[in-house]
Length: 190
Image 1 (cartoon, helix red, strand yellow):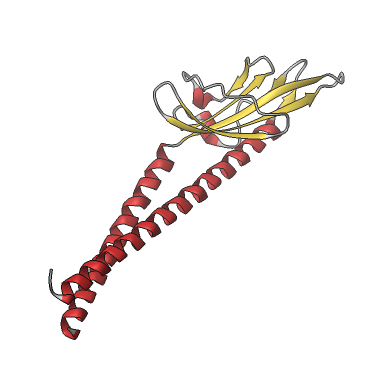
Image 2: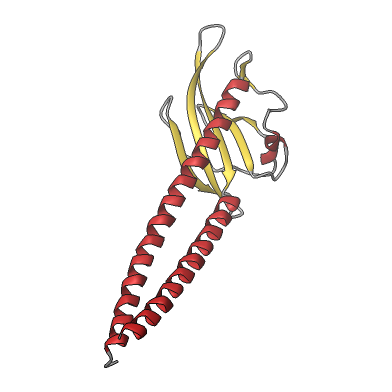
């Protein structure tokens, strides 16, 4: 490595690898953050639909047999919902969660959303959003209920893996093309 051309090529290669490495980390982090925010927004929409569908019964909440989102009615759809009372007892569960025990997370503060990552007993990762509300019944009594919506992260994680693979592929190809171009340029100039 005594030639000036070789030393310049190695120096530029190291700089490119560092630059592209940092760029990949920043882009990956931004993509994951945007994906998680989108996931949380979708769960919030489902949670609001659950709240709108709930009706006060004699002494508890009553949910309709079918919800607008059809995945709540399909077993194994990956989208689950439940309503619990203040003591943690299940009042209602979506048909999609038949045979599953959704993890009982920390009860959120009244009126606040709580976004958590959880894991089913079979190891399936979930993204969950919970909301604690006080429901006023006809007799004026207030009761606390926890609404929770969870969605499997398998599809989300597969998308993230695909994005990372494309990111490494494209940046690797660009780095290789740039190094070859710089090598030819240095050879011609020096």
